[in-house]
Amino acid sequence: MRHLQARDLDSWLAAAPGPVSLLDVREPWEFEVCRIEGSRLIPLSQLPARLGELDPGLATVVICHHGVRSLRAAAYLEHCGFADVVNLSGGIDAWARTVDPAMAVY
Image (cartoon, rainbow, N blue to C red; front, top):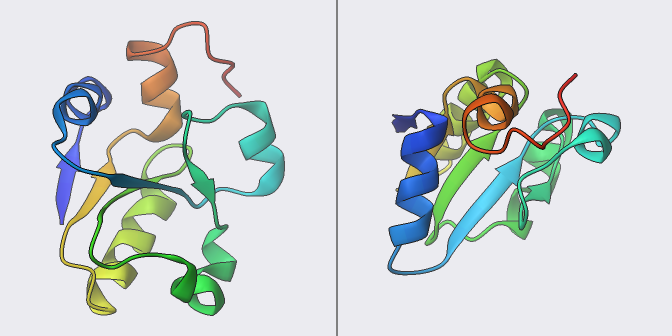
């Protein structure tokens, strides 16, 4: 599993040669407040039941509020055979503060 800071992830996404899955594991109310464009919401508690909705062949960036839930989810994805998993260190909060200052924070 890789860990990327928000600015590094932004650069990586801009240069990514192929499709990337942005997986947000926060709760629906959090996702409504703010999200990275193109991300898919699967709350952490639902991840085991909804694992089949994800493509293990894609690079998967896991996102939460501060990076704790996403770390747990990323470890689970690796355990399930996902080969290219990235944890957003600092979560959506770091993204809002360093990449997209217009994004709402909570």
